Image (cartoon, rainbow, N blue to C red):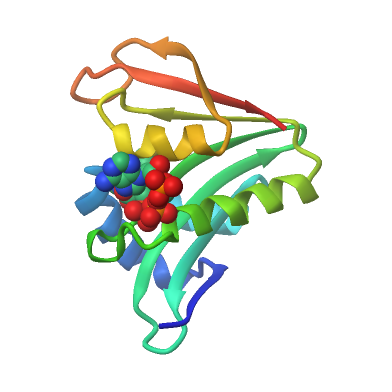
Length: 148
Ligand SMILES: CC(C)(COP(=O)(O)OP(=O)(O)OC[C@H]1O[C@@H](n2cnc3c(N)ncnc32)[C@H](O)[C@@H]1OP(=O)(O)O)[C@@H](O)C(=O)NCCC(=O)NCCS
């Protein structure tokens, strides 16, 4: 396998929406993702794929509005987890934000999502606040923050 990162394209949108819904339980949907790619200068969406088979391995998305950035989503398909791909996506994004001279990154995560919290903490993110009832099911979110 040759994992490789690339920009998300319009033709990827239907597959991304499908994985968003299966993995995250929700998606911005085709229309919003199209306008993200087409019109939003702050939006950065990348896919991790196997260069050999073109299989979709995972994705990361972010808004960068220097000097701040916000991670929107990061996920790896279940069958490819625990092989370092989550870290690869995060490392890529860390390099990207450095090149934009970002000095603060935030993200929201469910307090029950211990795997993701552990990954974010290993990249220096800390929970700094609780957003009460943030998710559709009423679950709170941790606001996690990293100073670069
Ligand atoms: C979180 C996620 C992206 C990690 O992807 P992954 O490819 O399995 O991650 P990696 O193999 O690179 O591991 C990165 C770190 O994540 C954490 N982690 C991943 N799986 C874990 C598990 N089963 N138990 C505990 N920690 C875990 C660890 O900190 C790990 O670092 P380590 O290997 O040094 O212990 C993946 O589990 C996922 O897609 N989850 C569903 C989507 C999601 O929750 N996204 C975040 C939304 S805010």
